[in-house]
Image 1 (cartoon, rainbow over the protein chains, first blue to last red):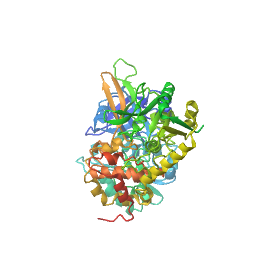
Image 2 (image 1 turned 45 degrees about the vertical axis):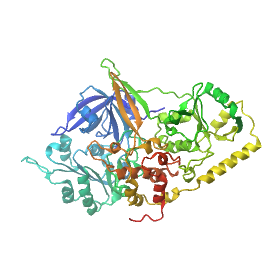
Image 3 (image 1 turned 135 degrees about the horizontal axis):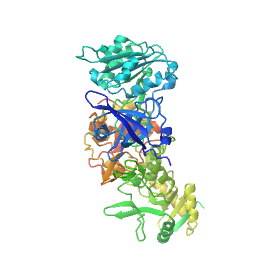
Image 4 (image 1 turned 180 degrees about the vertical axis):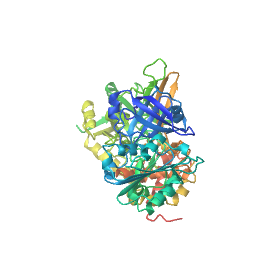
Length: 280
Length: 350
């Protein structure tokens, strides 16, 4: 019988420090068995349990895109036992991955629509997956305009800086990178909070969906902006975090009302969330 | 053969025969309480028991169990790779389980055995186990099974049902598994007509004692957010000390934690019962906790049992009325009272 608790063994291919505060590292993993890689068919928005024997498991959004073959990638914030252990791993080390888990951004609904992606801080991982996925030459014609507002407290805290710079150069994606503040005289992007920059850039809401991920305070102040721009709640999509163990809707801790964030989520529309208790 | 009669003096021999082909579990008085244990030759099964202190959920979802095992030895090429932990799925019979507790397994199936994801250990244990229930002639004062869609003789969670008719037991098959069990038992006698009548009378009398103590349907019809935001939770949670006794004893509390344990170079990944009563249950790595307050945790337990489960599975409440949480709560919180608050026609602000 298929055992959903048994992680696929993977090898750490590389591990890089993403941010100046050294709290975020991106870990690239390669499956030890190619048949496991075949089974790990994921869609942007999903997550996986990273498993370290003897330490435990953590649920982390998948930062790579299914269009990138041969590896999977996760950006891990150092907060506890397992994430700290992973931060100290080296290329060649063996660990495990369980997944893919949860639902995904509703790509069938998003087809033919304009996308507004709003991200803040380190909650840019599954958004990165989504952007890479949409920019893939095979997928790009399926979507309308793509607008990205991505902010961090200061430039050193932005994830994926090289990719952000490369996307800036493209004409098929509109990038609005911003920081809360900076002393860098050469900073050539925006300065200001994500809600304010979203309001200023005023992306078109007609035929558009917004995907928003970030710290609660950013989401709280950006939602009214999106509403004002004309996005109805069913076209505002977010992804939630919760303490999880099993990741498959069985262990019982990640519920919001009758929904399990791990299995029924983590992706919900604002309209769905409005019908659930405010307990997340 | 769908029903037989077994005289009480012949029961030990009958159980002995079953034990030669199955692992047989039954209620045994150990220490201060009754508990389901695997019977060994000479163990005394007590079918005059009221109920076990701990629910029998541990027979399918043990308090702690190995999920995977691994080596961390430096010279082991498989170090750090999780392996399946071996399990015993040889056929077993649970004898004398109360109908409410057996019904609880059916409710728990909705969680462990879904169309998309199947818990391998729960489902395999369920498949290889035959549940032989024992009807309740004398329900407890804390019982309320008939209010939550089951009852003292409810066969719906069972493969076969025993009814104590004084000098003997009537054993009725419920499922095909139960029929197979009965046909393998050569020592049963035909049920005398008087015994069948007595069993029916016992059922009627037990059900009449219980009555209807609240109406789960009324809770299903309520708006989730209206119940969630009701003011009575403040009163309900006031005396709770978050000890977790209710969740520990409850046959439909299945929540678990996953922990790695390592001794020298060998380790196990273990799952172990957890409780929504504990703040750590929902504590994020960041320090944020969506159920940081006692009120939130108490509300979660009752909302899950009586509202969320109903809404999610459309199969009644996640409660079988066994009454353990009522009986053993150290501060006398009574789920029947809470259910009545939740099902009251007007959830008025205080």
